[in-house]
Image (cartoon, rainbow, N blue to C red; front, side, top):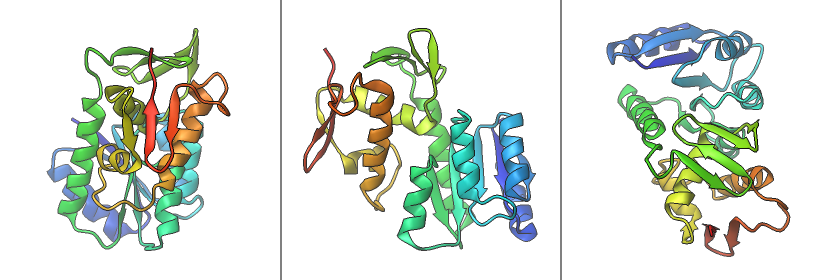
Length: 228
């Protein structure tokens, strides 16, 4: 049974989502504020986190940022009442895997959850289970990255990006392909999200991030993962 942590401060929304998720067969834990939610994220592993942006004590953005800084790679879906593009982009740049804007239908949310859990389970293949990319040795089955014997923290989304690039190695992949295939967007908020992820990945993969040799920028198009 897949486990979901719901961090939502509105009692009616919290109860309604919890009931619907449990009817779908998920095991659901809840938290009513950001501080308690972050404590639960760190204490108990789950398969997915539903995180409201507007929370008391600690915002959803801060919870997301702190969880990623702690090395927690669990997929995060932001629940936001804000419609501004900048908020959606900010959430993704802080390490969220997806967002859904209130008000939303339960069917839409359930579809997003199923898609993310399916993608999360679908990365490992025989080819991808143990792979070297740049400075890192990657175990996609266990979601573990190491440089020599030292573990390097990668978010779940960073693993997904690297898996997609590796599956298309030595080929140009557009920013829109990445947003569609990795994030699952039919309508993209902005390609700046992809660029920011690439900057962070280069810091972890490249010998010299300022002169990349592994993840190359193809100007005006996207990126290419170069392998020997």
